[in-house]
Length: 209
Image (tube, rainbow, N blue to C red; front, side, top):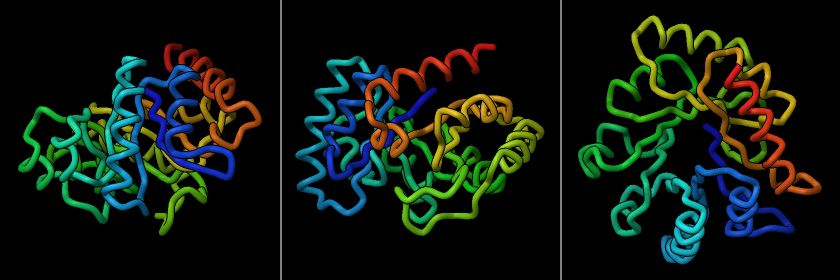
């Protein structure tokens, strides 16, 4: 699985970034607008929701659990300092996707135990798209976490995130993670749609071999 996390830069808006990812073939979008008001978020979310419907793509939102049912999106991703997975499940039940952020085996184990459908595990390396970054994992960090989860009997998806580029995909595929989440590496490319297409091609080749 490849998840695109919305972002912006001096050339593209949040909505532009989602359109780029979808045009490039990505079919899983997380709308993340940390510093926006709910009013601005909802306005953008409704447009992203229509785009995702047009492209037959999954849409989840970051953090704003209280808007999931109102917007009728696919689910929500909660960070380590956001609402707990347990609380999210109490509010949303089982009909929505719930993802959680993890930086350690313990984080991932607890998230899965509490009912997360997947964890976004990172950061792989330093990234400027997220504030208050957790300790860098690198390839060895993923190998260790995946080994621990397998031994604990968990086989739900673990998605690597944080500064990942095209060149990292073959190495990450060998760690046992289920997929990757991307943002800046696509948006900052000279041709973002082409970059997304190339990433998907490499990903599909590596994860099916």
